[in-house]
Image (cartoon, rainbow over all chains, first blue to last red; front, side, top):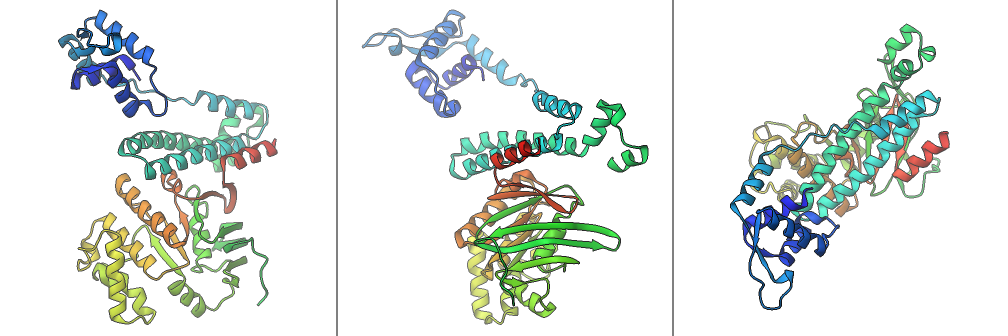
Length: 187
Length: 243
């Protein structure tokens, strides 16, 4: 999550005080992790320095929190470019889990049981997210969907890897490879 | 009849059941117990035996060996007539497709099991209308189910299954032919209404997002219930125990 660009995007709706920006960020994007006030004002300061926003005059009461910030044309262009730029697809290569499975096979440990435990942990998280969808707002539902589809993709990898453990063991430890006809049956 | 030593609160249980089709074994000693009011998901790869297990629990298949108990009675040794009666009165079914009569209206389909159970026509159609209302199909009662969308047809199937007030609902891939959003709505209705009425659900699915609606998930592999994923903690403990 890019905090500067997200704040900039919120400012494109309407000029806002730092306090209002923080409140909106926490509401829509915080998901239990609030943005510190200090980070909000430091970010707005950098955006002003870079010509993305302009700060209005200090309003009665003084202090940075009494300034109203407005997005500039340069800032709007930056938001447009950011929105149009596809997010880098993350390969999610399951490096930790892959390493565990590979090492387990190399060491003759129960890789299938590890995968079962991981499957159960994934399903438990999916159950939590499903419950969140039942009780949460539409924003929660959309975010939970994103998590659920990623977890589902992981589970499909876990299932396929479980089905290929014999072949994977044979590839990693050639001397432990089953007889050709047996390997054929495991495909 | 001997009183079984079932687990506390257990409504249905399979004990070490085997079932083969010709020379092909589908179940090789599967055991599972489901508590009253529990929503259980059975997952597993294609051909693992999960649907056969469901059909044995529902009394549709008779296991070759082992026992199936329902509410204190031995199901697998019951006469076919008794099992049919049980399926009509105590069990509801929601399958992927093929369970509705396409030439009949939605109301006819929901009322049909009630009529077969000798409920009066007036009461059966009143109940059907009420269930269709609850499932958001109040205006579709007069439509033939063959003309309904997949999601609507599944909601009719749920209305039909719940209309009898069953103790247990068996669902085999109930969202298998639906898109994600429609499947989600169907699951929310099925699980929500089952919880509301304290109805037990045994659900077979290959879809983890569907299984996530259940209280407990078990995995069937090679004809046995290999992993009970009641909780991630339990599974992790099981994995450590194997070490």
